[in-house]
Image (tube, rainbow, N blue to C red; front, side, top):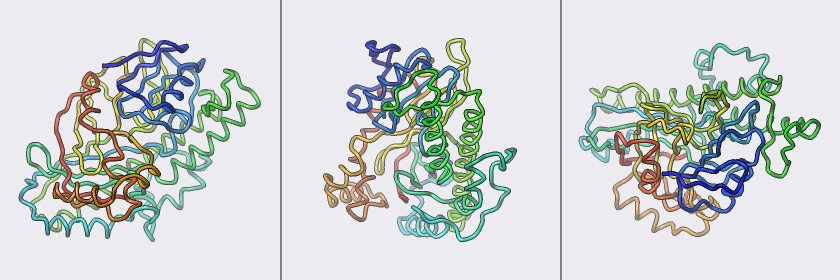
Amino acid sequence: MEKVITTEKLPIKMWLTEPEKGALEQARNLANLPFAFKHICLMPDTHQGYGMPIGGVLASEDVIVPNAVGVDIGCGMCAVETNVLADSLSREQLTKIMKGVREVIPLGFNHHKQNQGENLMPQGYQVDKLVIVKQEYSRALKQLGTLGGGNHFIEFQKSDKGYLWIMVHSGSRNFGFKVAEYYNNLAKKINQQNNVYKVEAKVDLAYLLFDSKEGQLYHEEMKYSTEFALANRKLMIERIQQVTSSFLKDIAYQPIINIAHNYAAIEEHFGKKVIVHRKGATSAKLGEIGIVPGSQGTKSYIVEGLGNPESFTSCSHGAGRVMSRTAAIKNLNLEAEKNKLDKLGILHSIRSRNDLEEASSAYKDIIEVMALQNDLVKIKIELSPLAVVKG
């Protein structure tokens, strides 16, 4: 259930116990924006971001805020259930499958050497009129079907019903970053010249009037990036399925579940059409099926939205960080983190000290996160990790 802070212009509704200082300060900035609507939401995985905290939800009137969407536009999750009982796989089979996955999906900064096909790109857009999409289009053809780095992952999991699942977390690659950078800088420039809402530059929440030429262009490029991120995940899922099917001949796959967590959408809430910015938060409309992943070595969940209006029908996008990447690398014990995953029998990606930035101890307890949002979603399926590939 939410806790409410009422010291600012708008209330801040929080589904967490102790928000970090930086994230709370950013939430206060959001709550004092003159175009913010009704209240600000903080999901249980909230932590500090650029301008707006990750795990935050902002509904706005008449404006769109690039930093309230973030730099990896359209980043999200895809999950697929199979008909294979996870316990029927030997560790040797799983190791071979993971090796095959690494061979067909470039990781980190790596791209494909060949274009992956224009037919796989988002359709129905006038690409020549989209500044960043046009600029990055040829490179993006080689980025389709690539994982990226950071917290992006490919994971094989066992459900609480015993079945094998495949999960992919990835985003819009360079599209999202370039679109976010370009339009945030453009918004800053426009706000310097004509700051209708008098938003201070120091809060790093430069805005674009939604009906302006620039606002409409950003919205279109954001939508393109979001669709590209889904196309990227779908192609990876397809390639993973091809590898898996080469080892498990009778395997069959259910339709893909997809959910994005960095985007803005026009929605109706409390009787008014507003622009809902979800940054590290996912949609949880009534009956909507979503995904809340844990950290490396912990459970993930397939969930069903409860349509809670107080969260603008949103929920968390994962566990959320409890320490920065730098702090994790500096403070966590490499052998302890490796042993923790080894004891669970997980084929994991913790090899060197730098890998500690994605160790499970760098993240919040996913069980506590789920308990804090039991009025936002209900758990449908629990998924336990078997093998993980990280970017």
